[in-house]
Length: 219
Length: 222
Image (cartoon, rainbow over all chains, first blue to last red; front, top):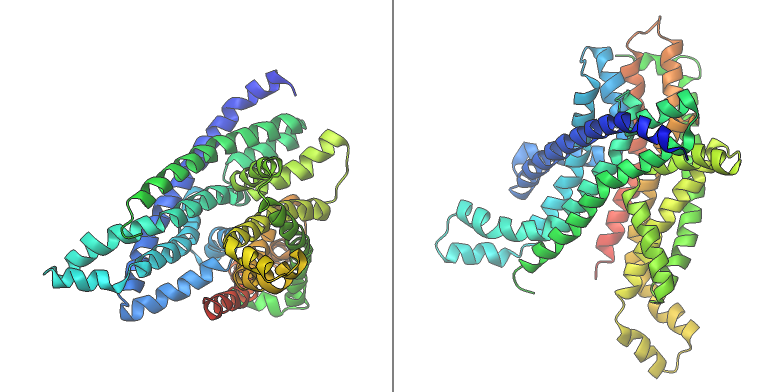
């Protein structure tokens, strides 16, 4: 391993790292938004919408991100819808993550026993108060481990972005290996930057999980 | 819309052949992962400090590293570092088995430790040998939790094998690209039809399996 090569590659990888992290977290933000909305739709059994949400969740949970990105990035322009690679990556990740988040948040909401709603009504709360003040906080602490697992999964999935020629970490590594054959150095930096991206999330995740479990009512 | 390309010549068959190539890799990796995962999971549930430390590191590596990175390390790195010339197929089977074994062993371990110790003690009190305890008491109980979870893992492994295209294996996405390239003149919007079909093919493979796993999970819930 040659340190001079590593230091000369460092800025390239840092740039790719920032791009990957940026698109990754935008995608995660989108997926949380989508997941929360969809879970609420399913929880309140809103007629037509919940059917659409169910179909969407099944479709995106059962297909790989790579195939979804190919469809969005190469398939859609053929019928006139053109999106840039960055936007496509964020949307793709958001759609994939949205389906996973929907499932996690919905099962959290459904895990809160019905007696909690009934008791809230007995205390004179209305539907909205009962949902916002009683159900959501409890459901959230139940969903947290699954949400964190999803976030880590989505950050790992960012590694397929290079397939739609986004200049992410994988793309940079593959490019440099192809150009200069400094395989060891490129792979070393690739691993280091992925650790940098995922280890903090993994550690923060276990910490938040402990805190959230502490907040749970009942057992 | 570009769907007509698929009915030209043997295009649809080629696409299915590409899917078959990906399935072959995933099936081999699944078989290896499940058998190694069960063994490792049983070792991990014995709570031996050395095994625990090694398996914690192993699981954490798999948890943090994207499969794509592992694929690059094995495919490009091993060749360079050890002079091994692994084919793309072999390296992808190595990587997916490495990943799948970790996932499977974690499932087996969590199922095994969820069995209360009183089950073992009661079996011993009834005079069952260690082997009998496992065969008649423990395995039937963990099977009901483990089987739905491992079926779910199978769909995840099938979805992950789509990555092999990135190290140059001709699978369904690559075949799709070839079909689009070959028909660029005659049907310029073939990309939509072909990639929508690939999308649907993956769905048709994974959806029945994951529905079956959910059905088993519900059926065996109590």
